[in-house]
Image (cartoon, rainbow, N blue to C red; front, side, top):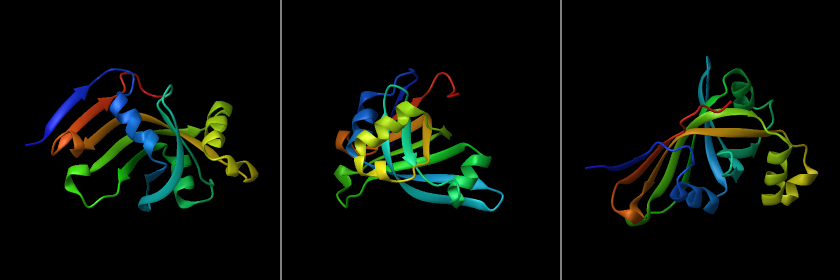
Length: 150
């Protein structure tokens, strides 16, 4: 039986923040009339805003699809074969162009990106589910933003 803990507060739970900070690649899923698509992107995390900042050209398939439909899904996972160590975050949110603050955060995490022509996106997390078997088999933590991201 699945153990679920719901947290309807506005701040992202600390367990999710810790997990997101430990990793650096997300799998982003977009959708268009062509169908669904996914892409892997390096990210930086802004816990104050609950945003994942990532770079991707607007000319890519997922870039074009995000411009048309900013509602996306994403996941961040720990790759392991040990069942007791399985951890992963699934989330939905809205993307927009990142602001200067987001750019600074991204470049702080990935300083070598300063020489690239960056198109930065900010994914405002609206709903998330963390699976963390280190807390018990099938342990899940659910979170939903009380106010939508603008």
